[in-house]
Length: 292
Image 1 (cartoon, helix red, strand yellow):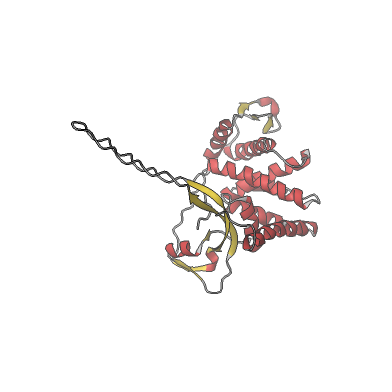
Image 2: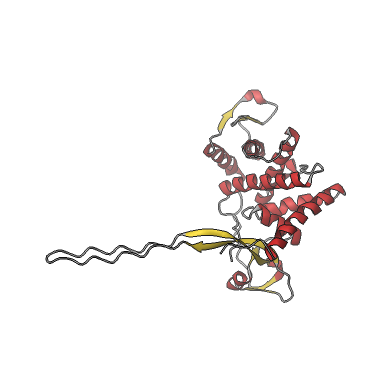
C-alpha cells in the first residue's frame, strides 16, 4: 500500500518548509552562523536525502549519529526515557509477486524427468516513504561504540577527484598559462596549474569540479552567475567539512539566500546533491541512510 501524505507525513513536509523559512529569517536577521550550522548537518549526513537533512536541521542541528530505537538496542545502547524522537522519512519497500515455479513434467519410460526450475528470488520495489522516528547518539546511553572513522589522507584526495571527474566524462588538463589562478574550468574541461601540492590542488580542483557538476543539473528557475558561484562554494564547503579539512575556510563565506526562500530551498537541494555525489566517490565508506 502506498504511504499516504496525510497525518504525520504531512507534518514532516510542513516541518521541512518551516526549516527553510526559519533559515531564511535567521540569515535576514544577521545570524549567518545558522546557515553554517545547516551546512554542517548536510556534511554529517551526506548520504541522507536533502529532505531529511532539512528535517534533522530543524529538530536537532547538533545531531551526529542517528539510529532507530531497535537499531540502538542492537548496538548495545538504549534511548534515555523522555527523549523526543527526530522525525524523518524512510523508504517503504515491498516485494513483487513472482509466479510459482512450474511443476516438473512426468517422464516417459526410459527418459529422465526434467529438473524442476529453481524458485526465483522476490524482487523488491519502492512503494513510497513513511515517517519514522530516530534518535541521536547524545540521546542514548550504554556501551561505547567502536571508532569506525577512517582518517583522510589528503595526498590521495586530488587523484580521487580526478578519477571521479573523468568518470563523468570531464577532461583534466595541466596548463601554466592559467596562472596566477590554480584552476579553471569551462564546458567539461578542468585545467590545473602543474606541480601543485595536494593541499593546494584539492580545494582548487574541488571548486571547479563542483561548478561543472552544478552546470549539468536541470533547474526550475533561472540561476545567475553569482548564485552559481555561491552554490559551488557551498558544495565545496560541505565536502571539506565532511572530510574535516582546513580547506573549508576557503569557502566559508558562501551565501545562498537572496530574498527568496523557495530559491534557497532549491539551492540547498542542488548543493546537497553535488556534495553527496563527490563524497560518495572519494569516501565510499561514509555514513548510511537510516533504515528501520
